[in-house]
Image (cartoon, rainbow, N blue to C red; front, side):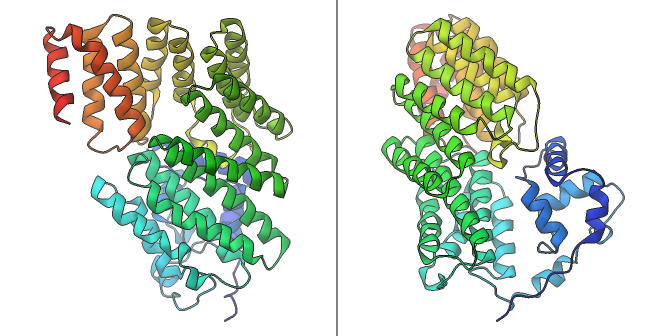
Length: 431
């Protein structure tokens, strides 16, 4: 059946005004942070709205747009009623019907640990090989991109442990679509980028849940995809994650080299924030090598690039990278260099600055703070921070966070006569 024609959303285009699509996307992301929402908006998404491809936004975008334009309804913004969009479920243009896509989005947007498993039920819609078309079209490329966004959203809220196995299925489907070929070159480019980003997302789930060899394989797959398609942005992303993984695996020199390779790939992309993140990855490697001078030089570059602010060229996947993440990564450098009191100051700032919507990162930063305080000789404060992590572990499932907290508990055992430490150790033993 032929695809249903789209009517351009001229109203939304007028609301964008003189801003470029990338500039407007950055405004959307900032507005989302103001209300504690998470959206991965980029220039491509704005283009899809204005072309009429997105007739009605999902619930997260709806809340953000109504916050940006108070007093207006979705109809005032040029969108169709949600019921009308749902009613087109018979107009199938790819592996998702409109109804299936909406159910998937609503499942992913729901919260609670019990919902994690339920939310991933929608992922096999992409992975059903019986529905893989002979040639991939725009709807298949959009499905891959949506899978990436939804996996990142669930990871931000719940951590990786419950997601990894289910998320591998759409990754296999994405590469099957690549093997099938696309109806046009622009679609194939989107599929390459989407499949590569999906490989990195699944690799990160493996990384965060302690499956380091699986993570290494997925990151390598993403890097190969980037090299085949000549995608410098995807290449920089893959190297960034490979540098992070190498640091966590105790291979600091490999971490430095991967971060430097990522910087070379990112040099022409026009994103200071990406260069800042890669400098922080490099700093972490130098800290692991106990090279304080090189670490400080990399940290200086990171702060300089970060101070340049956001840019339209910032990749969509970097929505997590704000001041809180910068403080966290710097704290890890000082911890690796043995300066735990200094590390604790940065970890505390990271925990204080982090948007509570990113529950996994809040737990991670609090765990880093607890560990730094314990090693810096502040057991009472460390136990308080550890208790905060235990509160969050009812919602967050992350092997990395649990492992870090277990190390803190071992460090605090000699201080168990302290009432707060004793309470923390008792709670930790029962979790």
